[in-house]
Structure formats: structure tokens, C-alpha cells
Length: 235
Image (cartoon, rainbow, N blue to C red; front, side, top):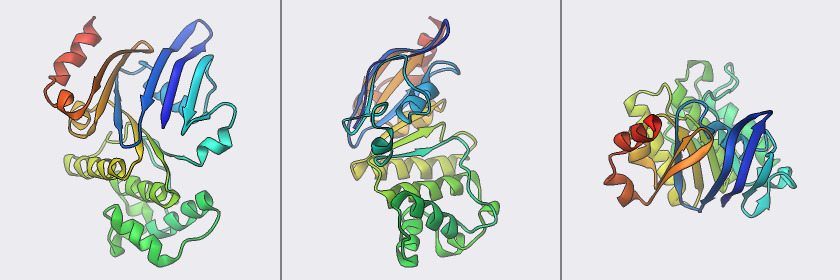
């Protein structure tokens, strides 16, 4: 569903991403770990076509992102670290607006409320102004947009940053539900606990290169992820 082959991004003499190979399947939750500047956000930006690769190929659902950017955007939803919504509008009104943009049509109120409930926002929260929402509640609205769009791939950049433990746990549950329905999830994080509890696959990046890959929940569970991460960061 999400594929990178020899993906490289250079800014002048600086190599932000160095020959990255990734193949993320439907149902995977792939967590990219690494220090600031390791290439995690660059990877997300290349999949989103926010920047173009210096070399290599990047695909979503078998479609080349550079050659067919509009077609690939139909299959993907993106949740940045700070979700921007219209504060004076309610959560339901935001969902109606953004889902309408994604689908090209307006969904009935009953379906919108069903989506809000699915992501853990009750009717009272749905009708509350987003200016009163926590970060976790804002993210849930954007997950609801992705569900409305029936996105096949979900890209997230540091989604648990600034969330309290309960909100982070709830968010992890939403990602697992999305993956269980066949969505491919690619997320960057500094949160090792979130990665260990949520991911089906983990990659560690350093200076633009993928230096470690763990495949499968069983392998992740039996790995001392913190020690492995620190080992690579010190090398």
C-alpha cells in the first residue's frame, strides 16, 4: 500500500533521506523512530508529495506519487502533529466541512454522528466548539475525516506528542482499529512506549538511513526497544 524504493532526498550537499526502501502492507502499523533530523518527517512529506524526491520511487496503492499526485491523494489521509480545525465551529461542523471536501458531497447528520461516535466523541462533544477541544479530541475529528473518506493509508507525524497517557492510549486504539479494517498506517514518533504498544512493524532511522527494522508484534514485544534505540543513537 505504501512503497518506497531507493528513496533519496537531498538539499544541496545535505542528504535528508538516503536510499530508503519501505513496503508497508494493508493492516500494518509501521512506526518510524529516530532523533530530530533523522529523516522521519521527510519520509512522510515525500509520500504526501509535499516535496519531490531527488531519486528513487514513492508509491501509494501502486500509483507513483510524483507522476500522479492527485490520484494518490484519493487513497491517503494525513494527520500532522498539530491538527488545524475551525475553532468557532463544532466538531460535527468541522467533520461535515472536511469530509465534504474529501468526498465532494455532504454526508447526512446521522452518518456524521456515527463517525464521531466511532472515534470516541459523544453527541455532546460533537456539538461543542472545537476551540474548547483538547489536542486528542482534535485528532479524533481528523481520524473521523479519514474514516469518512475511506482512506486506504494513514500518515501521521508525531501524533502522541503532548497527549496525556489516557489520550495516547485511546489514540493507539483508534490506529489499531483502522489497521484491523485494512488501512496501512505509517507514523513517526519519539514515543517508544507508543511504538511498542501499537506497532506491528518498527523502523529506526539515523542520519537519513533506516538502520534497524523489526517486523511483527511478537518480535517487537520481546525486544528491549529503548536499549536498541539508544544503541543506534550512540553508534
